[in-house]
Image (cartoon, rainbow, N blue to C red; front, side):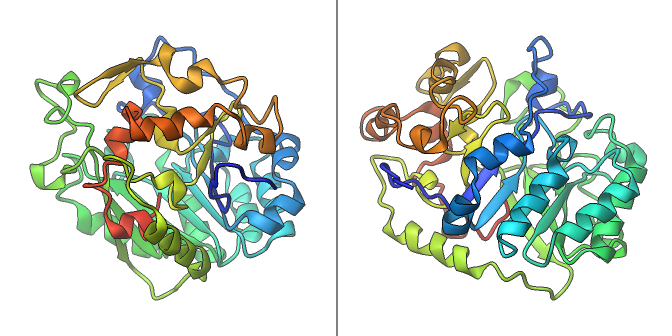
Length: 361
């Protein structure tokens, strides 16, 4: 495929479904209740039209299935799509990020049979029992989560991660969570320090019932993650990690921006409606965003204006990748960066391990 702008094509981050059963209080789906959220998703046919066997074989090393507002396991064709990928390229790294609620054991057994030792399932679970988990993952189902995690941990060759965000209710219960993760045969625990608390954003104050102690809050404008290994299993994914390292070393800062969309740890991002973004950070669905110097309204967002031209559901993937509109992005780095880029890719907060992808997305 002709790749006019030099995008990395080996890692794709896809919101394969915009559907979700949860009502997490810091999710756009809950924070913007008046917004008419779509229940769009990718069908196997739509997915295979963009990601042909030839394209996957020649280019792809990893698919990350995770949404801004949706959960990938609620895509009706999810199992079919995973099976399609593995039939073409068994060594492809499928990385699934899910809450894991409401799927029956039969479904998890089927997924366990499709995925192999190249793959990862990341369960986003913040509590240590049904009550505490529902304090943030509102409307989740603890029993089905634990069942799915246990099946994947014991019956699948995939790498299984228990991923928790630090909150007031779990900051002092890391031991209990760790013991549950071990019981489910998880390979690691991922602890995340978030930014979405009252001390960072006044909209959550004056009293933020979720905010943990300061030591468990991110010190930057984005999350900070730490992974603790629980087993000695190693995934054979070093080839594209090495590619990340090579690209990172070759990527130069443009003004105050070190563009991580040129490095494969973030992944080119496709939203559930098919719109292509350089990364998931640029797909923000909020009414406005500010970096302290300027504010952009969502209606004026680049992708809100050009969704039709940049959608793989109305155009070919190659045409979208090579569209003239991307010149605006590259020019903005030199003159006036997009708010999203200046917030997330400031060169002074891009650390080496994060850039090359040793932290999970």
